[in-house]
Length: 338
Image (cartoon, rainbow, N blue to C red; front, side, top):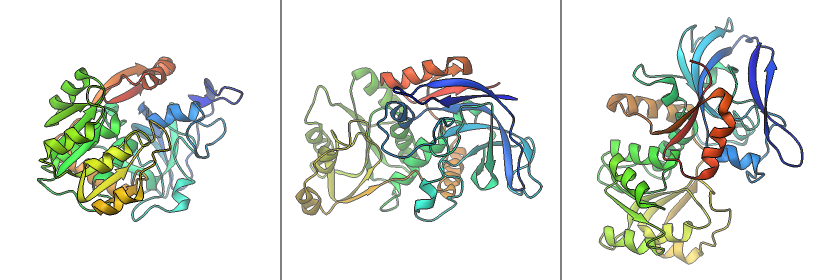
């Protein structure tokens, strides 16, 4: 038997802990004992009814986790017993562009996720962990880390010396900062408090604009780039940032639209795109090949993910409250087993 948390149905969806049978691997399946799982903004959005996509009724939440292989099918070649692993959010998206089928098979969204003592996955999903990285650190990678890597290389490859704008102190923002610095790029950031600004500078941002102190933060970003604008923006909030993101971007620059933390609207006028010859693209996390590249690059530099807080399995609701508060700096992780 194993313990698993599942979403509950009803007027106000919630979470409940269950005892369940341990799954048995098929020929190409891998059974992973989960040591740690991490939350993303979308996990709270699902409970709040604000996700906007289909989800598995009463499914196990969380797309992000890491653990140890404890059983494999007799046809498995990509993992062996005892391997330290994580998994891509879309198990069969190995490479290439996003396809509808990948969205229909999403860990923690349309299939059972990582907030359980074990998870059964096809070997296609498996990504091996670097030896220096803990399970808690690795559990933060699959959604936010891969999204950051994909976003910065979505429309054109990130180049040394380019300038990148990141927004906030959530997982995608901080991974984007770390990836950009690995590439030798200059990082500017916006955030809501001076305390968070200090943290962003500590993590490698060259300059940070407090958007509550400077509501027209796009003007500050332009000033920091001598009026030219940044080469790339990783837009997290959507509705309340997209117009200023466009205004902050150089002629011919790229905007990767990652999230919707401030809403699904935005009203970006087409003339803002045309007049600056901008390229806008939405991200869909990324394939396993991107995940492998991210892990290899992080291992080369021994980059450690930024962890905000770690909660024991029994306090999974507190982990959700931490995400809901918006006060986190980095990833919120649940230690499922030691």
